[in-house]
Length: 201
Image (cartoon, rainbow, N blue to C red; front, side, top):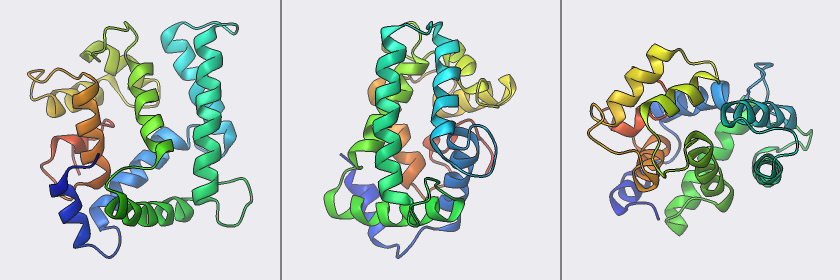
């Protein structure tokens, strides 16, 4: 569920703010357009899977790799259904932002994220928690997010920012709260703004 304070903030908006757009563009460029070809398609999700398999040391026959592939297929098909307005099998930059503008309205109405995004949140947590102890520590965060193009310095700075100098344990609950802040908060001081490796906006 999305916190009521965040819902009240969103209800004051008619569209995405410039700050929200910058955050979504960062996410699109780094974690969705994984092969950096200027668009998002199924190939990007396959690239993500290979990066995640490398981090977790999954071989080609690993059951975790196979189940992750099925999860990514579901996420991609749902994203494509919501965002690919011209049905060309590609989610463009403009389609991405339009989808999120519509998504914000849906969150207001239902007070929760769509299923595919919640599934992606759980997937990202599980992939980064390489030890399986239900906490993403600093090293795990650095190893995972640096695989997507961030420097070790950027990762460490971001981790320190959203964990308040490692005072906050990045467990599943904390990750969910920071995730919601990243997507929905307009407060530039919110710790969740740093969740995907960018500390300075």
